[in-house]
Image (tube, rainbow, N blue to C red; front, top):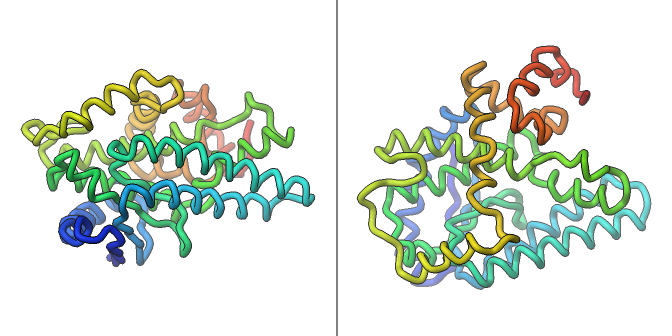
Length: 289
């Protein structure tokens, strides 16, 4: 049973929201463990923060990621590049969060003491989030926490690839679609949870509509080419469904055994390629074709 350490850093807004968050976490956690076939840590920190803390938490996340990547590199120049690339990611994502925080329902990332979940109560007030939608949202983030416990290299991998490309250690063509895989898995699991809660796909018919401002922002970001849209989450649904049909949740979870088992872009779009490689034992011995 996971113990959730809910920390209210959002003042009155957080105090009124904390009980809902704890209830949603305790509802979602056992279902995520079963549906994803992945354990959660014994303790998970959940921080309720004001909007201005979002970009700060993102910078901290990428600082941790940068240090972890730097520790694996050989030269001081390479390590400096790792820290620089990670910091650039932190700044870029932080700017987005400053502008569009009403669209960020929750996020999982590295904090000062390990992986944590960050939630903005003001966002959920504006989105008019129902309790079952909150279970869905936090359930999705708990999938990412479970991914990290399964393989602690998954959260830094996307940034590590960017560092390796910058250093000439990896060709751009060899970059693995880590965000698409991670988010597709989160969506695959949370959609099962949504169905159990009486919803359809990613929503609950009859729930209150968000405020007009939130609806405006949702429309706006769809028109911005630099913002990841629904395709980030939807691209891997065919892949997850194929693996689930072939071997159930444990086979889906095995995608996160290590870098060798993360699908390539071609495999993500054609699951049979990954299944063929898996059946041949390539994934099991830790090598890529």
